[in-house]
Image (tube, rainbow, N blue to C red; front, side, top):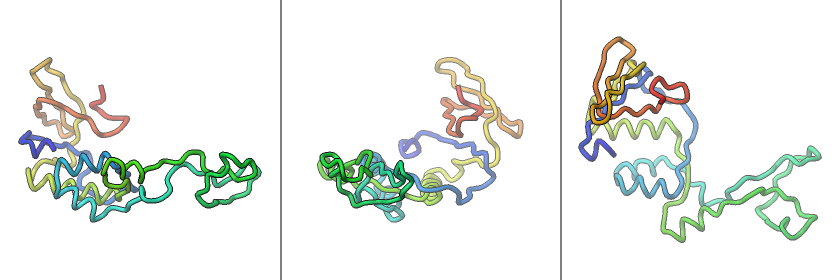
Length: 176
């Protein structure tokens, strides 16, 4: 989004190259709507790799009972009024109904590597060298309000930025 708005963005990535790794990531209806509003092409590409889950019964279901039996029953909520009925659903999420009411796309999942690949390709169309692989940020100095931040990179080089966003997890070197 920032690149599309003309903001100069550089990503300093720890890994030497993109590798297909990771499991599925869920997009709720509202997130898909935001994605579509930001970029129709990006939205279309994500939808091509998407598996819709919001059209199914969704929620938290218990398959292992206190007595050790395993069973998955139908989607009945009769346990709410019938004490003999199995209470397999702890809670159900009316994802399809909510999406229908607000005219949103249905919730679903995309494989993380597919999403990363699409995002990288779309960003490279706007700025071919937006990502710097194999040279992560290892430290920074906040230069005060309005003065930006100086970055210290793993190879000893430095860079200056107006804003620094750390998106590399709990052990981030830029976590404040």
